[in-house]
Image 1 (cartoon, rainbow, N blue to C red):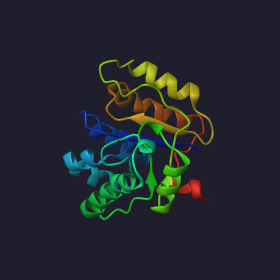
Image 2: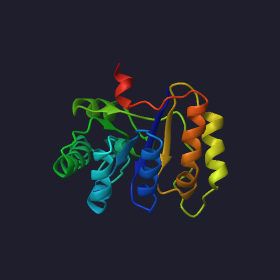
Image 3: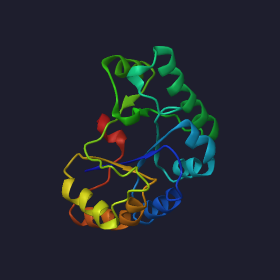
Image 4: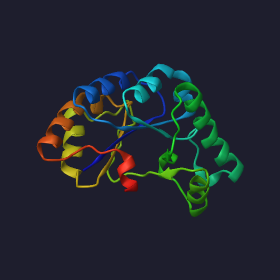
Length: 187
């Protein structure tokens, strides 16, 4: 089994297409959203929840978590949690630290707030919208690096990911992979 996750810092016009492809392939994913993403794209966040995806917390303003105070960390996490809960009724339980930056202190505080911190085992520099490597590169990167238990991180601002996603999902299923919910990590 593998886990498909997306980071949502801002919208670049591809998330609806990504959701369409996930729905067509009967695949659930986790979307880690920032506070500004929730505020600017409420309908997409509602759709994520309505279609059975996990909505994870990616902080309010995407700071380096180890560089801010305990109180600031709590505010960064709690503010997004409140926005999503009020918008959708969905209770967030997963946190992805911006840029993957963490410390023992930040992991402790995140856990204390009731969150499981989720990193990734596979990612590439896909967030640079002006330097997109193309559909074939995105496809090849995922296919060449996948392994049982992989947590795949893609950024939804990437046209390369949006264009490659259908082929990625279909071909990984053909290889015998099952897309699992992050909730299965707890089992």
